[in-house]
Length: 509
Image (cartoon, rainbow, N blue to C red; front, side, top):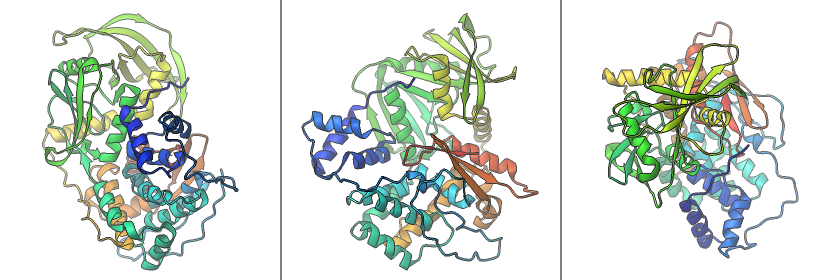
């Protein structure tokens, strides 16, 4: 069963305002703009219904396509056999970029580690999607849009600096000459990072959530490792608000902080995304009181002694990729602790792997929607597909912060001058730095590009497609010495819940 959620008023307002200012834009183009701006896939039929309801319906900007629309899977299959990272001290040979084939295929494809790691970083930041959006507004047909995206991807997801002649071809194809100053500025602004979310209740009490949506915090003294880029954090926030379900990796160790969460259900005033130096980057102001739900993970023995069991249900099976078969046991509980001002009845779900007596993780939630235990577990695992790893990583980074062990993270480059070769070269550097800051193990900021290249970027990759996912598998050479580091990286990427423009999820396995 798929649960339907209402659109936020600000998304509806944006659709109508944008259509009034740009009457020629199609519902298809608006859907992609909304995906980039709000991180939410909204169907063309839903957009059309909103436009028609406001009397703004128009045939302007619609196109008839004589050829079938090619599958967007070609995007993930691009860039094959193009990137080779040379051993340290040697210069990588620049290879010719092959002509790209715009036909759909479900065959396995080969590519490079660098191409797909850079692609993951770009999807998190939204860089090439932004350039694609500018091109779509010119009214280009789908085959032209696909070709434009593929040419951009093959220029950027490589270690070779883009050349002026290659960029001239992109400029001619995409008609970007008049917008290069805007492009340089907007791409640079995408590097803004959110340090935490500041939640203000109607009684002016305040609590915090880190930008990766790991947990609740009583103060803004939060490790920098839990920062995230602005576009990703805003999209995750809007998605949670639309579902009216806050999904966090783990409950706080201090039960007293739960008082804020129990209060926010009906008394939310505003949520602010706070960046560097305490600057507010985005504010969501509540307009009405309504119940909000939450799902929090926790280690199996967390809150031991403070859980009062009310009733239990039989276990049910749940089969998901990549987790496999899981067993979900549901119970109704009450948290009993003297610091809690409220003692609401909650659902406690215990997740175990099939044929394993050991609990993988517990979830507790106040959900009383028409969702069963399997659906609640699936919602959580959609965001935290490997919770055991995520919890261990969270604890490790928190411990480093407690013991005042600071990392010196690489700094993003300055805003580029408005020439396309400079802009794309800038974005290549950004993607590498993003991988270091957000994907790679904690000590990889000390390694050079070539050293990381030898470990990750130079690896071969095999890509397979199913109905919902692109499955990206790294092919390891004999005696490969960095398997644990690679596994860490791929699990970190999977936590970002990255999706291609066709809505399919990227799974790194």
